[in-house]
Image (cartoon, rainbow, N blue to C red):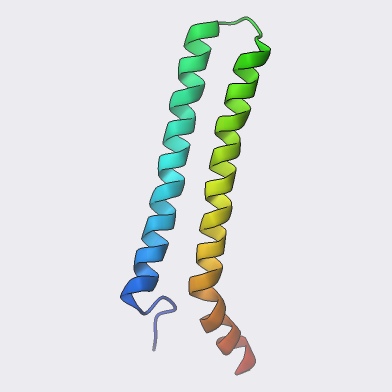
Length: 84
């Protein structure tokens, strides 16, 4: 029985992608908390823009992680489905 991510490089790609998503989420949370601390309860369009850009960066990192997952799991899964 083989593991889907059998090579060391595949494991490296997966772990790196997961860590980058966690790091992105951590930085996004920090940015949101700092912005909330600065502006308080009042609405500020600049604060919204900063938060949106931070969330957009997390989205981009998450999409890169999806691509990494497809890179690692795509070929073995295709081979598995073709063998049915």
